[in-house]
Length: 381
Ligand code: ACO
Image 1 (tube, rainbow, N blue to C red):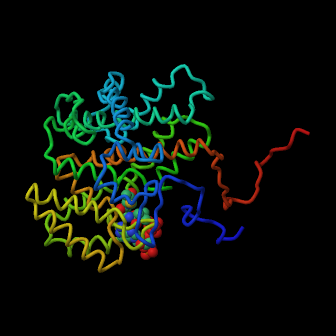
Image 2 (cartoon, rainbow, N blue to C red):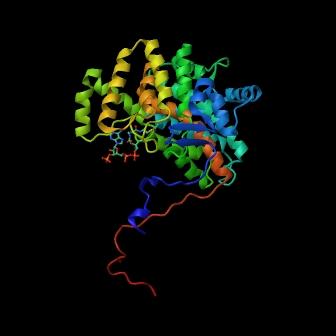
Image 3 (cartoon, rainbow, N blue to C red):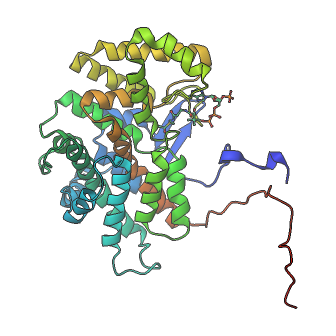
C-alpha cells in the first residue's frame, strides 16, 4: 500500500450511491430528490421538504395534512425528556442536551426490543423520524428558555412548523418575514449528501443499530466546529471583531496566527456554497426588518477581505449565524437548530442505508512499531 492509496479524511472517496440529494460543486447546485434547494426554500413549508426527503416526492395536500396530524402528537415536550434535561447543569452545551434528549426518546421507544428488533422496518423508521422531527423544536426551545430562567411554552396546533418553533422559543408569534427566513434556513440545512454527520449516521446504521443510536452519533459529529459547530463559531468571530472598521486588523492577526476563519471554506464546494445566496437573501430581509445595517456592513466587509486574501468563500454557516442571532436565538442554540433541520436528511439516509445495507468498515495502513515481544515471555507449548 502506497501513500497515494490512503485517502486521508476520505477526501474524494465515493462511498455509496444515494437518491436523496445531489451536490454539484461544478455548477454550484444542490438538488433534493431532483429539486433545486433554492426553489424548495422559496415555495415550500419545511415539513413538505421533510416529506420529500423521506418519501421521494413532495406531498399532496392530503398527505401533508396527514403527516401534520401525526406530527402534532409529538410537539409537546415529553415529561421524561424534560426530567432528563432538568438533571443537566444549566451550562451544559445545548448540543449535549439534545444528544441526551434523543437518547432518552430512543430508550423509551425501543424499550423491550432486543438488538435485532430495535432496528425496525423502513416504514417504522419513517414514523420514528417524524416523531424526532416534531419533538426537536420543543427540546431546543425548552433548552433556551431554561437557560434564560423562563417557563416552557406549550405548542400551538394552529401554527406551522416554523411558526410553532418560534412561538415555543420566544412565547410570541413571529412576524411573517422572520418565519419566512427561519423556514428557509431549515430547508437549506436539511440535507447535504455524505457530510460527516450523515456519514456517521450511515456507519452506525450499517451495523444494524437503531435509528436513535444513529441520530445520537450524528449529533456528536455535528457538534464539531469544522462541521455544524461553525454557525455558533461565526457569531464568536462577529463578537470578537465588533465593528466593520476592525475587520482588517482582526483578520491580519487571525491569519498571522493561522486561525481558521469560521463560516468560510467547504470540503466539496471550492467556488462557493450553493446555499449561501438564498440564506444571504433571507439575512438581508432580517437586517432590514430589525434595522441592523451594522450587521450587514460587518458581514460584507469580512467576506470581501477574506475572499480577496484567501480565495475561500463563505459556507451556509456564515449567513445563518447572524440570521439566528437577529431572530433572538442564543449563540449556543445555533447548532441545535441545525440538528432540528438536518434530522430530516439524517433519517432519510438512515432509511436508505437500511434498505440497501452493507457494513461500512474501511481498512487502515498500520504505521506503528514493528512486531516486538514481552521480555521474559515464553510460550506455553
Ligand atoms: N480559514 C482559513 N483557512 C482556511 C479555511 C478557513 N475557514 N478553510 C480552508 N482554509 C485553508 C486551510 O488552512 C488549508 O490551507 P493550507 O493548504 O495552506 O494548509 C486550505 O485552505 C485547505 O483547507 P482544508 O482544511 O484542508 O480543506 P478541507 O476541505 O479539509 O476543509 C473545512 C473544509 C473543514 C470546512 C475548512 O474549510 C474549515 O475548517 N472551515 C472553517 C469551519 C467551517 O466553516 N465549517 C463549516 C462547514 S460547512 C457546514 O457544516 C454547513
